[in-house]
View (tube, rainbow, N blue to C red):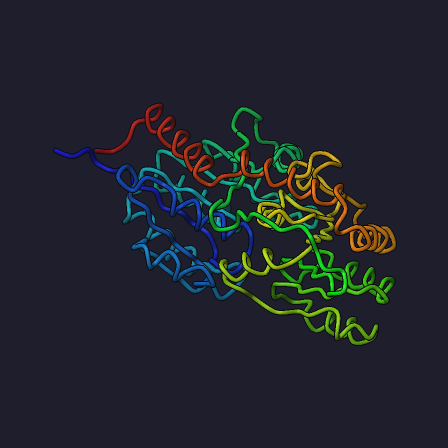
Length: 372
């Protein structure tokens, strides 16, 4: 007689494009489905990564949240979670408030959340609701020391309930044996990745490019978001149309290929929980210029691994970009890419991270028991 699988339901708003959402997809793909029965409930709508999970047979239940406070949506989620009788409810992103409260109401034995970002612009009422619902969680996993520090201060969760498990990526999808010798008669290919939203700081990147527009470079910014019209206007105002391209969303394999064919990666974020884009780009061996913010500093931990600049400082960003462009073939820049690549390969493999999640799931099931 085979052992009954541990049933996990992941509750989150959507699977729209984003580093956190991509990590959740990769985590689920790497869990042992001989031990775990996995299902996803999306209470807002489906998204960019939905098909990737459907292809491997992960059941997805999708609801439609119409309002910020939507009692009908809450009731529908309650009915679904009550009927599913999961051993573990694991909430992510905006699923923490709804998911934890409902899980407590229906008597779920194990409630887990993952805190994916620092939240400096979080509205006070959301902070209060997250603080209230966090008391129901058995663990709130933090994806970095930066996130743990922010969550301790913001939500007052006991530190012993807040393990750090870094986000990881599928190493084989991004690892690249790079030829670092660049023909300097060709344009330096720069790339960046992120939602077009204030947190990612792309306005400061475009301002930096304005200061070095005489340099021989072209930049592709991968991503979509609310700031696209504003950023397009900024590019046009500064006559950068031939140098800076907003190329929209790309699938993971396309992102990997863009990184592998580029010469430099830049991430001008105002804040980051970790910076999964830095991890992906670093794994391809790219030299990186990024913001000197908590989270990113846990990936690029020394000047031998990358160049960090203060956020919102377009002039300093321009200076460092110019430096890398001018020195792209030097040993220092080559070694920077190689050093970060090896560090990431050792620390951020999704297979290693998935085992850490599995160990936590199994530990809590052993401690708290389960319905047979």
